[in-house]
Length: 251
Figure 1 (cartoon, rainbow, N blue to C red):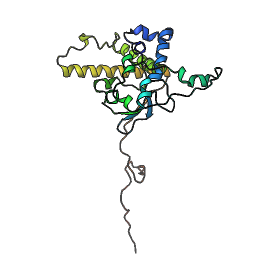
Figure 2: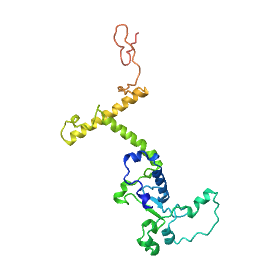
Figure 3: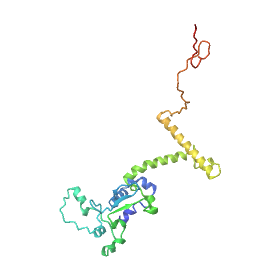
Figure 4: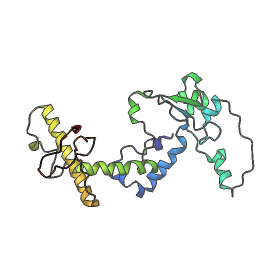
């Protein structure tokens, strides 16, 4: 990827990220990054390993790479007449694809294959969890500031900021040490957990008020007794005798 595109998002402040849709130059740089990304060839397996392909590899290369053509000995394309009125034909032509920049010294003296990056030695590579070391925590499925990234993370960020606003409001304000006067890490943790529980209960209460949905009540009923229904007491107020009635015979 060209250096200008690599550092297109370096040093951006929070305002520039929020107003990305108003910056035509930044949006164009984000879009220009796409052809240089490795392509997903196989989704993650049960161990989380994925298979990635070089963007210059067949069957539909997204970029033109002199290094790829030299290492894998790709023959030069034949001359062909292209209909400039056909947008699909012009886009698929090699001349219309962005070219991967390589150092001028490498053009004159190509590096040995074993000294090239792993993706240049083979058209496809397998990336397993932890292969990137310390950089592995920065892996994400959506590219930074891409429209798909914005659609996913902006609602999440709005929800998080809303929860932070509730937690730091004057009603609870978990950031105020005066509301957590107990000493010790354990006591502070328990008090903070209780405050968060209070915030969740307040959110549920507000939701019930907004939607006019009555809160579900749980009733604890005793055990259900099975058997014949008892008869009501007789006129004397005494319960009927239990057990088998006594029988007498007369002569």
